[in-house]
Length: 167
Image 1 (cartoon, one colour):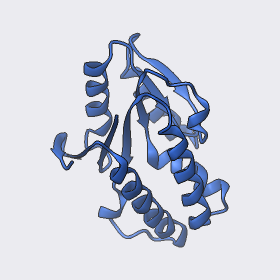
Image 2 (spheres, rainbow, N blue to C red):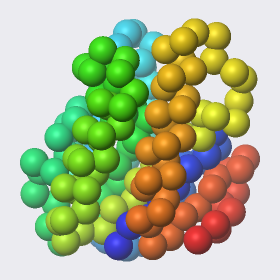
Image 3 (spheres, one colour):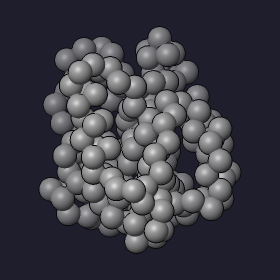
Image 4 (cartoon, rainbow, N blue to C red):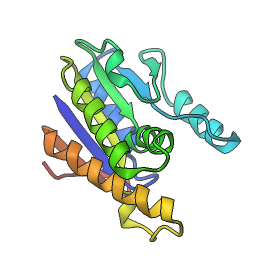
């Protein structure tokens, strides 16, 4: 089962996904994909960790999510945007390469018998990126979001903390 949960920054995506995961399982998995880029980002990671209690198992994997055995688990993947950033930077900002690698890895992840709650940002709804790399990434994120949403059993768009069921 694949749930796709998207929205803007601070729209309530993570809270919604975590609440849903706890409804689906007494002991869900939180799969973190972020690199700790700087002090501000480390503080953001610490806030997310503090949001979860002992019922949660936290796993960290920057790129190769399918290497983890998630069989039979309810998994919150937080988040596609940071996961995709890892492919994008490692591919030297080549959109086609990063997209192909991320799609292939996501397809591998979907072969596991687990319930996935995938969180992603809708970054294309905000300001136009000021840099070429930013504009490339916005396009890349949009294409991968479409790819995941097409495969999802359920798609939820978060607006100001409220879920809008899309699919």
